[in-house]
Length: 365
Image (cartoon, rainbow, N blue to C red; front, side):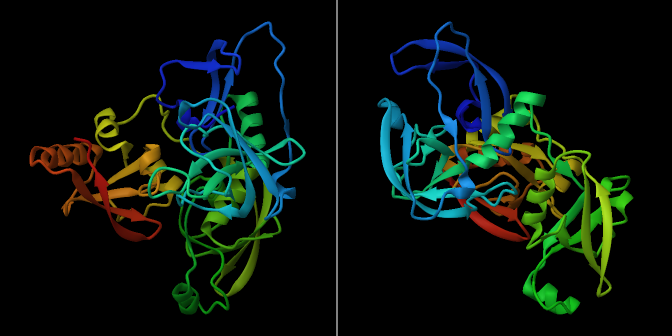
């Protein structure tokens, strides 16, 4: 098992063992949204293996060990503690990382994070660093989450996630005040897809989903996570606030639409120029990333590791150097023009989770 971003651009995958033996690996399946991939090699050798531990049982302050191949130097072990749980770093709906101060650098991605019992409680995935090196802030996918993803890939070849068919947004303080709510909690339904599980369950525009299967829904991200984790064709109960009253409903989940296959990027030229894979905004992508109908541009599906502190999947590029764009082709043309002017950076304006941001992006010379 490794991170999807480690192999997503590879034509072939080679696994090298600690004794220097190399094997061609088969990609059994990958999960772009969860950033995990499952590989298989063929050998007569009996390899040692590690065991999963429970990330839920890991506590802040617990000692952990990280094993990886930083900068291609070879197998390396570092130690640290768990700094925090439930970190979100890119704004994606499935961000739920363990934060650690164990030294993790380029080349550690896909490696294990161990507890002191020798159990894997995380998959090392990303670092937060202004320099590109370790500064004591690194992130791992929790083992409980990784196990669910891998078991789905083993069974189906991909991850099947639950789906309601609603476009939602978080309830902020002003929205709560306007609706007469005591607290800013829940997921506000902007629209309901016709013939979707939500439509069949009787969910309406303007409903605020406050509970799902007995769990309190804190915000829109929490709802996406709990619905996705439930699975496909599963019965669930939910509670909505409608005209100031609590209404209980039953729903049978559908299957969440999957992102485009990363092996067939929508705009290879844009990927090369900016380190991103872009797509036009389709109905499914708007639903998947909660993009309102009045937002137009090119949506980001994949991001190169060195840009992940600036740009995240789901961001919508609406301007390049203050000129509006509405498609990946527009972005590509704008970048080409900027290069011809001899500039080494571009200023993007992006839509992200209800807000707009200006983000400078370096251009390779």
